[in-house]
Length: 394
View 1: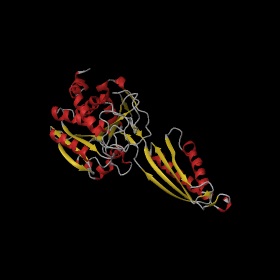
View 2: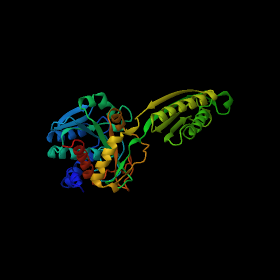
View 3: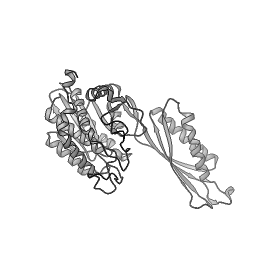
View 4: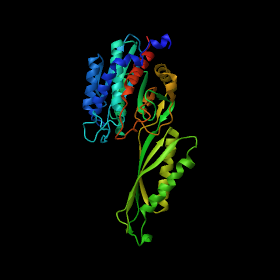
């Protein structure tokens, strides 16, 4: 390891903080709060930041917390984000620090994300080995799906009130070794859209279908025709998903109902493909319904956009990660069809969203048996400290 590499934070610098970080993470795990209800979590974060000397702003975009720390005279600034909310899932881990809140648990690792950034916050305040401004963003409601915490914080003037030159964030990644990183420039995680299709026909007796307009048959044809969109309308080199999540209609076998409903989840990795999917879905649904004599209402709701990492910031973060853990623990991240509201931040600022391995045997995200791997706490804290020191190098 070179002298240059040794100048900045390393994982060993956090060895004596491992137990403290684990205690913080497990406290957060035991006291989960749902989106836009993170009152205790936000106060827990804000109190620690204030204790360490940060200029703390509460209630940004609702329950968001921003901790600012200035050092030296350089005008450069960095932002690092951690999410704080939990999910409406009943925990089944049986851990001694399992959720104490019925029906709510940290099934996505936001407790770990928050604890890692707090670990870096304490280190940076103590060592102050940087020249510029650090903005630590603790965000509510990443799991909201729409009207999320990122949107709310941006609408509340996040980047005007706390300017930054670049923003960084991460998510843990079950299935990859603990302490390893997955990096990707450009599109990383998918845009996510939800479509609700209400089909109205003409109900009647099952024995006289010729006197009806059957919405069940119409719905079935819509479902099957939608299967051609990806294979016949989207460039084979692009990635997209259309999933029919629900189909509802009818109450009895001898009754042709008046209406039926279908819901879709639509995923894409570029604005062009996203627009194309919407055009084709609308066209197919409308034309198939018309062919059957039915009418349709289409509610096409656009959710989180694509997480698109900027190339220079991703190259920089990859270099820092390789210095921290070794090149052998860094790999190219495959495209991830899940979505993330960090995408909204990246629409306003250049930056990079990383993935940190949570263990090859880790339960999957949003699973009742999931648990964040505490072995990552010193790794993540060291990453954010080192990234800050390198970005704001003296």
